[in-house]
Image (cartoon, rainbow, N blue to C red; front, top):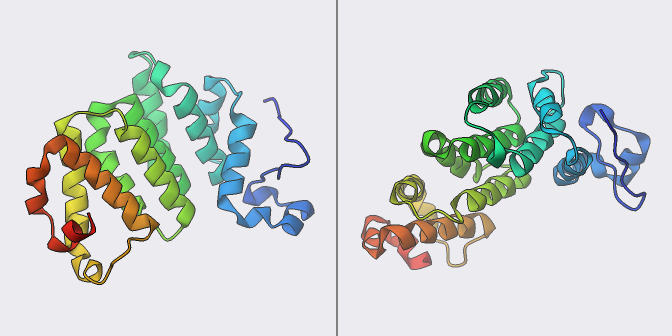
Length: 218
């Protein structure tokens, strides 16, 4: 596998099993976003089969695996031939089932939707919406960005309905807290943005199905 070295002015991201004194001094090992972006840059020129081999490797660290999945999704997922999909889907689902890393989980959920939107939208998109409530802000951001990517060109009622119904349940569960909100924080604003996308497709009649606390924020 070819290694790519970043300029000295850029923090060289290391996985947690690769901690060095330089990274301890810089504080980079405590920044999930820096680690993930660093590995993404390191792997972005790898060929598809190398990335899939990395994803299949049980010994690889979570940051490396998440970055490999993201590179695969960005560069290759839309080019996979139909006869190749079953094997690639098995690799991703196996890794999803074995990983307890939210970074890996989020990236694989996105990859599955890109590879087979009809089969995986209904199960993976609600799971990504749930990740928007994760305690780690990087996981929240990753999930939201992936959902934006998934929904940006969609005009399908079925998909909008899945997003709307998932958010509607979430808002009903948190309606007491929402009653005291006047200015949404970033996490809530991101949910409201996705809700607006779904209503744009489904129609404004859906507003009456929402809690009044949400309508006030919209």
